[in-house]
Length: 311
Image (tube, rainbow, N blue to C red; front, side, top):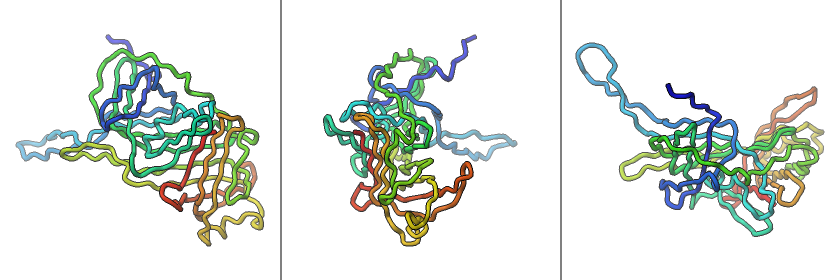
């Protein structure tokens, strides 16, 4: 009898592809991912019923169609520690229709794109069985909650390949830096429309529409649309200083700025230049009145609805 295979005994590798759908052959030394909350669905799709007319009463069986794989995981939103050096999670974000712009020694900036979308190869080794996803693309959420470490949640979809038994790779996770707690000291800036607010939670969802498309002559995973949404919960304050109700009624599009980190090489700034205020709500926590706010990032110019800059 074979020994049990332990779920925690896994290695996840990711590398951007030079040609869509061609295995980029990621290695444990250069492309290992340090993630948490991993969910892997190796063979998603549909089952086409046969509906055969035959004697008697029994199941007809099915034919698998639209076969693809899905991977969800969360990584730490932490900069590389060196200004101008991309973080270890950069390739994952680039596979979510995001461009990476490097200014050597100064900054790395991430912005949304429509054209020139990249794709990647995922290798997942669990107990000596390797699963591979090709042509992988996805969507992501940036999550910054007070008194927690900042996170990026990725939901990835890729082309299915048959798994195979193979020796698990040795992995090097040295490029993954430790995160900074979201706090008063570590997160010096949070403003909406230039007004500083006391923030409890903040989340930017990229809202990519990821479509597996399997036709004759082409099988691809495509990002066909986007619908970003920024959600935050802040402490309420007198309306004379900040009035989200009036902003929502007047369809005001204030800028949102969130800066996390204070040391060079460890600073991440999320910027939404024009984010339309939606109808606010009311809530309470620890007996304190709060406003749950929703803002829709708008593109004043092409691909300008948000940016994440590491300095």
